Image (cartoon, rainbow, N blue to C red; front, side, top):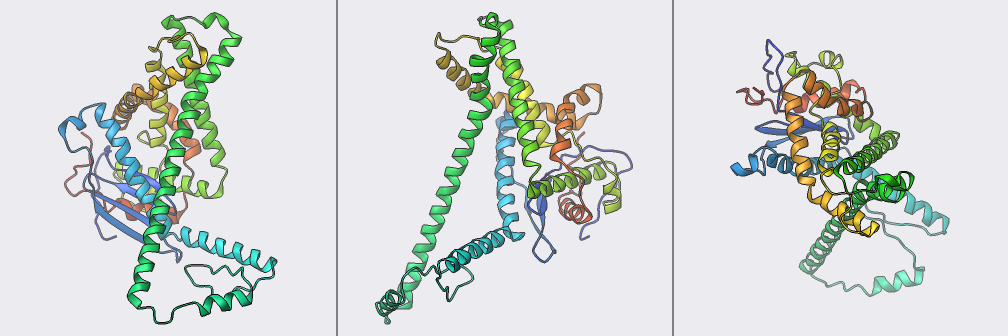
Amino acid sequence: MSKKQKVYDVNVKTSIGGQALIEGIMMRGPKRTAMAVRNTSGEIVIEEWKTEFSAKKKVLKMPVIRGVFAFFDSMKIGYKCLMRSAEISGLEEIEEDLKREKAAKKAAKQGIVLQNISDEKLVDIKNTETEIQSDTENIVENKSQSTIDDKSEKETKKSGTLTTLIMIIGIVFGVVLAIGLFKFVPELLYQYGFLKLFPSLDNAGYGYSFARALFTGIVKISLLVGYMLLISLMKDIRRTFMFHGAEHKTIFCYEHGLPLTVENIKIQRRFHPRCGTSFLILMMIVGIFITMFIPQQLVSSPIYNTILRTFISLLLLPLMMGLGYELIKVAGKHDNIATRIISAPGMWLQHITTKEPDNDMIECAIAAVIRVIPDDGSDILK
């Protein structure tokens, strides 16, 4: 280890958090952030940098408000690290190899011989030999190298722009899908399902609004749990969940004042109260109590009423994020009956989102966390 760990005599609570990546782990401390990812050779590649927070103004660090900015800040750095881990782990190379293999099989099936396949791009020859020869003869041999470089640069920029555009479209589509699934669908099920079974609830009173908020909240949580269960069946996702477990166990080992060794980390619990999974559940539970103050019937039309309630719920999302964040901070800082009740739903869900890691995964977690532990103890929550 390049850095000596400070071992505490008593248990502490740390502000250090992390995220499972593709074949690795990211750890974020108050001063440094580091990621440790295994490459195709099995070696741990470590990258670290200074921790920077988007919320630099005092007003953005106020309770509740800080939770919104902390959420988006974590999303930004987490996405960046996830993409970088895909590069280091060789996932992109594997995908390219699969594309090449698929293209080669397709060409072989069609009876086409592929020649001169470069490492970066497949040459898909679909023309006849005569057409290829004709195209070759049309190449201007005296074309300057600078012109070729300019063309290559333009193609690279075009490819980069296209990739960025695809990513933006994917993100927008994901947001729209999430809004539809977790916001609009529960409201729709209540309006055209639950109310049909219990028409007496079709009342503008706040007591009935709570029934609606409770129903939609349960549907949202059920959708989240079902989604987590479904993706946990995927082999690659299961490995990511194992890295998630390694992250939690390592944080616990550090908080318990034990030296960061594989043996000490393996015996720790993998369920941590400050997990992002707990934040999602808490945000949904908080949402139940917030949306109960939205009147049951805003307009006479059922479909427009559903759409309007969904829109208002979206406007209240920052408040839900902020309150959920504050609850997570309290649960991570204190250990009593109240905080255990707050943490319970998230801890239950972590039975799905975290799995027992192997030694290689724990080594990645150790490599990342020792680089973000500050020497001055500024990560310790008082």
